Image (cartoon, rainbow over all chains, first blue to last red; front, side, top):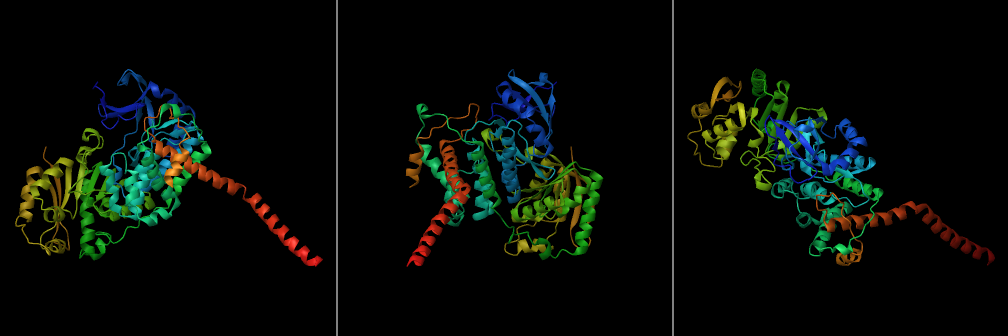
Length: 461
Length: 74
């Protein structure tokens, strides 16, 4: 048996940690957490949350698997197919994750427990819905203020308020601050009209001021005495936060891709034919996990969905991703995970030793990568040589469906309209030569009604 | 003003949960206490609104009656 390997992100909470043996994920529950864990299970809270689909299901595993001497119990949680992070979520996803956290806290209080953390990283999207993945997030409720209140505000309320009142791109600040957006920064950036809302005034502005006030006033031990914060008061606080989150809205509009399909000269014939080719290629490869890069609102992710288990449907445009997510929700689609990703600067490894949150490439390789109507953006807008694109795609995917868009295409002409054409190597022959170094061509079909070609490529081993 | 408010609250002391691994932050604790206080105040007004209304209206009616009474006697 392989030695247990600790998961690098699992170190903050002394209640336990995640580890892997032969690719199977386990969670060790330490003795120090025994009492809370017993209440979590015996009170029926764990069953309730799993039943509601709010918590990742788990089962008990053999104690002999334990990774250290202080193990009380080992559990095997259901594996999440693709781990995503809050800076990769659209507004709606972050909002739903926030509301789920508060809903869980309310239920936990009914069972005499409370969330001891409220990290956005504890939520993952599974089968189209947010779910809590941390089974050790609960502690017995003592009549105290909420220990995770600050974290909740930093991880959820601050980025959502900034996205709603300032700019959607400010969610990206979550990439800079590993424990959520500092509240003083959020308070400074928010426009005055945001502070008219009492909940934002209280949970962000007043909260930030209070933090600043106490920052340089260390509390002496002698001053501390027990303080009752009744369950009703905590419920009131949680309801207030719920109201604050629900009141935050963001409408996807005026973006690059929102009306892409309307403005393009892409004919109906070409669109239909391209969908047929993609469907045929995906069916022949039968991938389990597909990464659809530059997916826009997920039109072709839905084509691929018929023959695969999970499509990570990413785009640089938060509005397109928002529309994609809304469709996932309204259709109850369980196989599509919309994500905001800038492929020219994909999520890197961040946090302690750059290993707490994984880089995009670390989360692969995918069984299949789809890059439809994308190559010209990478090669022309971002000046990337074909060789570099082929190399990266070969790193992140075992097979690839890629569309070549020639210079004559109106979309490429649009990109070249405002700049000098320095792309003499942007030809189909060069494309085939460079991609041929990393991949074997297993399918190649021209798209009827256009000058484009769709390829099915298999990575050379 | 906030300064005075926070200072006036410092007499409320804190006890941190025994197993908390997150630092809840003193400032974050105080805001919760403060908000609960405000909400509590609001709750008292809200839950006693019937009585307050009754009191107000009885005072108002009394005044009105007195006025009417005054009218009759004059």
